[in-house]
Structure formats: structure tokens, C-alpha cells
Amino acid sequence: MLSRTVPRLLCALLPAAMLLATARAQEPPYPAKAVRMIVPFPPGGGTDLLARIIGQKLTESLGVPMVVENRPGAGGVVGADVVAKARADGYTLLTVSASHTINPSIYKKLPYDTVRDFAPVTLLAGGPGLLVVHPSIPARNVKEFIAFAKARPGLIAYASAGTGTPPHLGGELFKSMAGIDLTHIPYKGNGPAYTDLISGQVPVMFPNVSTGLQYVKAGRIRALAVTSLTRARVAPEIPTIDESGVPGYELNSWYGALTTAGTPAAIITRLQQEIAKALQLNDVRDKLVTQGMEPAGSTPAEFAAVINAEIGKWANVAKQSGLKAE
Image (tube, rainbow, N blue to C red):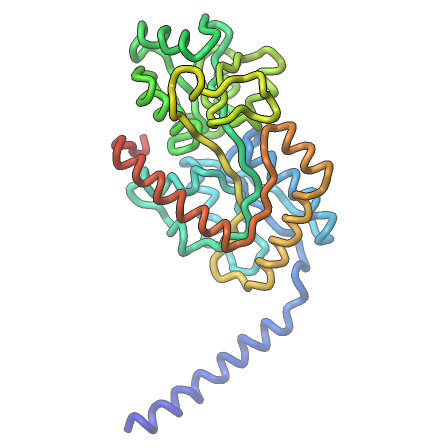
């Protein structure tokens, strides 16, 4: 009986498979229309900056518009969900930061699976963060700031681009290692956070060098230290937190490009190759380096390894600190 059933099932499935193959064969070569680049934060942050720089170059190399679309909310979850549920055809990309790998550890339930529902394309760039303060804070270095904060436990607030973002984790890590009590104020992206930081509404922040250095150079805020273990090439005069009295402190940011799981490998390869080429262009490299970023351009497999390692790293941090979305 089974020997008769199997051939019948195969005969029933064969036309559907042939139709799918025929439909794909009839699709025009990729890309044939505009590609959306979803940025899960408001304009003004590192993910937005990279999406616009890379998007411009891909528009030129691919010959179709790369449309940057900001979809902020819930520390990047809202924008990521758009891409997770998009058609797997390479026409919807997601520009992510480290928060993408932090969110699984701080949100009780996400509307997608951080690994299963996305296909890595490439690691775009990486770079350190900053510890910055409003000029109203009298501290001129990390040691003075720690002393200032210890004398005012819980009374000094620090801004972040949202719960679970690197600036948030940077602040929590600093609080723990420096033995101080700061109050976290989450915003819906770097832009709104900077607005209140520059006005003095929230006097402290741990932003990326890529977005914060411009305000430091303009004298709007004061940089006390960088969050990497070595000084930033773009601002070697700024000491590290590690050398300024909190040994071992380290927090580096990274940015990458994902697309929807199930996207054909040939399309992912094409995107990775074009993005990698763009990252090697002199004008692109110059823009990123001056923003404190180091261009990458990894393979999809290499980026997948980064994502898996980061998920494990932040799971341990969240477990030890009891950190949850506010």
C-alpha cells in the first residue's frame, strides 16, 4: 500500500515544485527594483549614518534606488520585525548594531527569532564608544567624575538610545565597575538623546565615537574617555576608561547588514560583494574613519559567527546583572 502511496504523493507535489521553479526562472535578474534599507532607529545614529553612506554607493553600483527607511521603536525590535516578516527576495535589508544581539537577553518575548529569521550579509564597521558629559558637570576626567557621582548617588542621569542599546549597556557596565549609582533615561534613538544631552537635561551619555565626536569637537559636550582598551585612532588625545581608573573596562560597538532568512544565496553573495567593495572606496573609508569607525566587509559566515558570539556574551551579562527591558 505504501509503495503505491509514495509515487502518488510525488506526482501530486511535482506540478507545484515545477510551478515554483518556473516562477523563479521568470523573475527578472536581481535587482530589478528599489531596495529598502530598514534602520531600526531614528536618524542621527551610527546605523543611520552607515545605511546612508552605503546606500548611496549601492544605488550607483546596483543601478536601483536604495531607500533608507527609519523604523524606530523598542531598542530596534520594531524595525527588525519588519525585515523578519518581509519577502525573502533581497529587497529588504536591515542595518543593525550590537543591540540586535542584546535584545534576546532583555526582552521576555521577541516577535522573531534573532538567528533563525535573518540571513547575515556582512559586518559593516566597528568602533569604540565615549563617556561624555555636559559642560555643567565639573569633572575633567574619569576619576573626578566617579568622585562627583559617588557624592550624589542616584541623582545623576545618563541618556541612551534605548533600553538594550550599547550606550545603555555601557552605562550599566560603568556603574558596576566604578561602584557608582547613575539613573538610566532611555530615548527612542540617539537623536532625541543628544538633544537632551546638549541642552543639559540629561548630563551624561555613553555614545559611539561615530556620533558623539562631532559634538565634542564643537564644544557642546566634554569627552572624558573612550570605551575601548586602546585609544581611538580618530581621537588619540582622549584616554581610555581602562587607563583612567577603571581597569578592564571595555565596550566596542559594531554595525552590520542582515536580510530576511530564506533569501537566495546568490543574492546575499551579490549584496555582500557590493557592500564590501563600497567599504573599500577611499571616500567611504575616509568618512567612516573620521567618524571613529573601522570599515569591515566580512563574509556572511564570518558575520554569523560574530552574531552568535555576541548573543552569548550579552546573555551572560544580562544574567549576572539581572538586566531586563524597562
